[in-house]
Length: 355
Length: 77
Image 1 (tube, each protein chain N blue to C red):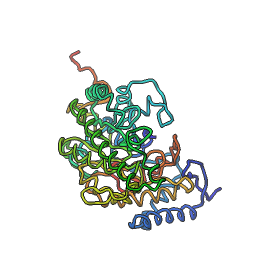
Image 2: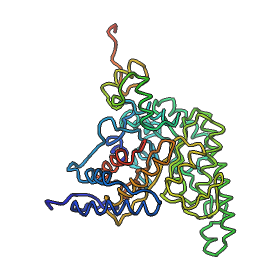
Image 3: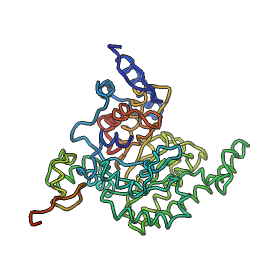
Image 4: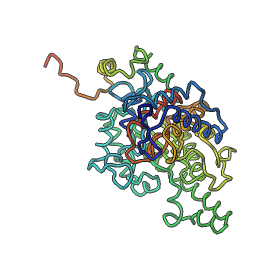
């Protein structure tokens, strides 16, 4: 054990590895991202820097003074009062209290208000409630406050929505019908997301975080991009963050386009130009965690994808670093040693503009 | 976990100047170094001061742009 270092598997389990094993995993993880995305591998110096971060003898690490970046959020206040098998901890508190706790107690750079379901569609019937909550929160906050929600195209399909489930249609080889269903759902989601944000803008909302874009495939991405475009045209000053759900846009439809660009199969560095063209201010690239690989492999892979995205972008990139993405173990309470190492690596090696 | 990120790499919001840098990223699409340089120039400090609670507390009080705890009662009271 004397020559071994403690790190994590992708599911959070504590393991120990030698320096040689760590460096081999770093190289392999970076090479995997480079191969998939057709992007450069990390250089020898960058891999050495990652190795130093991972092998730091302290449990918690941090960026060097002066390297700090703003932090944005996923689910926002719901991590305080939510408790439905997500990452909420079930503390009885209003959403205003949650916002103020983050601003004044936790040192958050920005904050986010969201509906308990955290999807756009269920917000429609309670829009007046959301307007009231947003207005009160904005009046009590100084830091930027976004409205966060998921496009979640899945809610538009049976049994939860009006359109036939494309998964069922594809299983029956009804390809054209599946595509039509995705197109209908996409158009409805675009309309709904835009409508919701139009109403929240009426009460002085700073902006919006489209969170987990693409979770239901290219139709999800399509709907989000066109909603972003519509909002940017109507509200030139609205803050818009476009955060992705996964590293590769799944081609559930396969032929959907945004401004002439096919959306299926895009990797983070190919997604960001579209978010920028649509009108987003901040992009959230994602790299998924492989639970069967070490944190060295996962972190090198994530940093490789993210560095390429930062390089391809003209807008700030706030890398997604929640449970199961960005080199973070896929675990509801991810070990702090792994979280802080990933955080430092993304800032100091990938060069992100925020987390 | 978000607190871990804030402690490891965050600008710590109104404790320092995190909200100001974030606003420049969102309102002007500024990348991190451009946003920090812009805010630092406006405040008359170095970029490294933007994450320094000691420096930013006094500046925030002077400019009346929000601090996290009560501002002390002035001498006349």
